[in-house]
Image 1 (tube, rainbow, N blue to C red):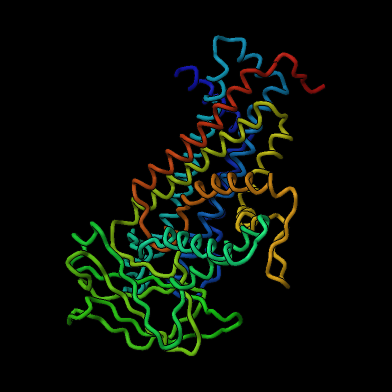
Image 2: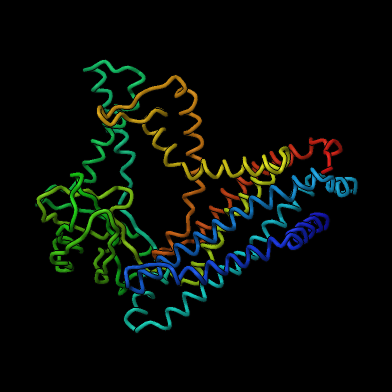
Length: 461
């Protein structure tokens, strides 16, 4: 371990010598302090705070991510190209110790910068909150600067998939469908089945039953919030739509009525409901009356959720920074693995190209959903097919599966909306992002570095 720590300290010295640490620290502080001066919000303290958290943490993640890739690629590749690595490699230090020492130096550098910038964001939020009126402070304490747990309706995906396969079998008995068209037909049938669980026709009532689980034991006397989102089934409609909510135990007096509420589509809405409306099993029954002349659609994924108080903002914010740290640790492993067998420019390009693929995961997901890389014809509504689909689509499926695992651990949205990040979620992020994916990449990088001929590297002339 002493040898690994020595390499880590040399990595720190290199970052300080090239002014990287100071430059990134100044940029992070400028982003944290400067963003509040240029951000535009909806005029409320809640809106400004949510935007501030989102943009500052996004900028911090972007700056640290780019600097991590740059440093991790440069610290190893440049040492090899300039023949400096030979001075270390000739000493009684194993190749894997050199690799891990550089990784440890980079992640400790990231940890320092993340703590510094995170403390500035936290201090700015607390300072701004104390300067607001009492009513606005109460809103922040209950809806934003808090850790709220989330309870959702049951997951119907298994039922939807089973019903989709049943309808597909019936369709195949009636009509011949080419194998190339099966993915598109399956997708269309699934959307039809899924609509049954999402649509609320005009003048109809939709019911949700949400089990609060173990949380019911400490929610007595605590007000809850409903977080809803809906779309219009008819494309092009705008404006607001009227609905009425009824929450409580059916057939009892323990019921709350909202009265007519005017809500806009394609946006999240949060409103408070009185405490103790769930039954003895912890099940909260929610009814929505669509009082409009058009059908409304509540997405299964995020159309309905119940938010309840679970903890304080300070620990929640620290856990969020912990997940961002896991991302940086993975990026450091990717950069070092690239530099283990590539030159500095090529390693940097390859690492950035991988980031582009991650940010393009929506395009990859569409290709997987459509079963082709050619997209869907807007006139016919059907997907074309290409011979490369047989190779690219399975590859895209694997890439999307890996990317989604990493992207699912996104603390920024949770922090900006006051949702809780549990210790279990942080542990899962560390296990999957750092230990699993980072570990696999590290083993590959160390293996490549151990087999690389360092003596053949030519210095700059």
